[in-house]
Image (spheres, rainbow, N blue to C red):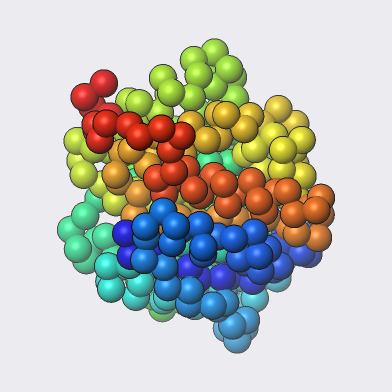
Length: 314
Ligand code: ARG
Ligand code: MN
Ligand code: MN
Ligand code: MN
């Protein structure tokens, strides 16, 4: 595949700085070499420069709910433009975060391209959180907790994208995977929108493979462009401590690899975010190294050769 790495050194979506160092840590952990070893073409586009702060025409009571509003809006618009351009060039973009607010730009840019190209978009949001808060519901004012609400067309957040066209994601296009922390009002939002979430209880009861298989089949039947948004905090904090919003009881090493392997075999992945890695909180680079390992599984590393079957043949 023709991949492009784009670093997004932002942490304006959080109150704990450090995720801006994420792109450097992922590169130092060997991401580029590894993708090349797996036979992919890799272009490293470097880091996106910190943006200007645009005027954001948001209602005053909503402004109050958004920490670093203008900075987040600046990032959103510049990431959106790059994501849209990369998708148009037929690249497979890998957005190296940076906090999860970056997905407002990456996914909206990809969504715009998919609409132009007449392709359906599906988003797999691998995360301990739903990121479905709004300026009115947020308990923290952290905008990384609002990205999915924005992408679903939440009106109060619409001004973040300025005059660029927003293609809102319909609820069927979104699956949250690994959910185990949700705020009271946020939960109401998720339910009201009808967004599907696979929580840790479902994973414990049914297992990753049984839950992923029907999703992949449904996406394959529609030949979607699959965007994977991987929040490090979906992993158990004992494996990946380098993140500001740890929640106990996350995915194991083996579950995480299995998700990535099944996504690879689906052949559908068209773009990827790797978000929330905070190297300042990490232990000797282990979270960054684990993430790079997971990317290897997503891009085709296997233990043994496997017959090239598509999932529906199982
Ligand atoms: N729900 C919490 C909030 O709104 C936590 C969000 C965490 N999001 C993340 N991308 N890590 O502040
Ligand atoms: Mn998140
Ligand atoms: Mn276009
Ligand atoms: Mn999270």
